[in-house]
Amino acid sequence: MIVIPAIREPASIAPFFKAIAQTTVPGKVDANFMAGIGFRRQSDVRLLELLHYLGFMDSSFQPTEVWRKYFSAPDEESKLSILGKTVAERYAEALRTGLNDDSYRLNGKAVMAYFKAETGASDTETAYMVLTLQILSDLAILPGPAPVLNPPPEPFDDTPFPGAGKTITLTLNITLDPSADPDLAALLRRVLERNLGA
Image (cartoon, rainbow, N blue to C red; front, side, top):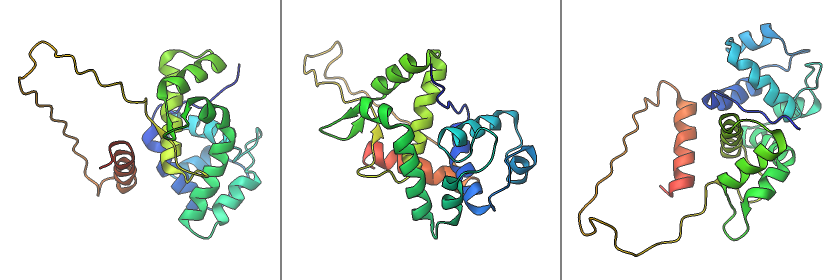
């Protein structure tokens, strides 16, 4: 069985990659380095698993050439392209498995089934793996069209349902102070724009 990162606090992924892009590449990644860039919680250890999985550091916690290229890239777009290339390489089979050829959209259920079969992890852990991949693919600039993790829409059923003809209103409110966390606000905006066509 393989190990695929499952970040339990996925909102930390974008700020983490922003922090390492702006911080000199360390000789070794340790608790002092993590604390120095603002990642002090016990749960932040999983971000190191993600760095290792993506090839940013080796098993002895030494940054690799991928990390050095990411840090030294001249602008954010170049950095996100480097991240996208490594995401596309490391998650290649998951992306191929869940990709709908006609729309270039990823079927979340298919990706989850793939991760579950490959890792033997619980449904909860596998769902975090899918969410981690979704956040990475929204954050990074992947080669080619950017996949969107979404199940395909259900076929339309025009059979009348009980209560047909009555108006049903559904309101969803999300309150977010963009000044409190501009990176999270920008990421959510991109996810909504990509998934809802907003």
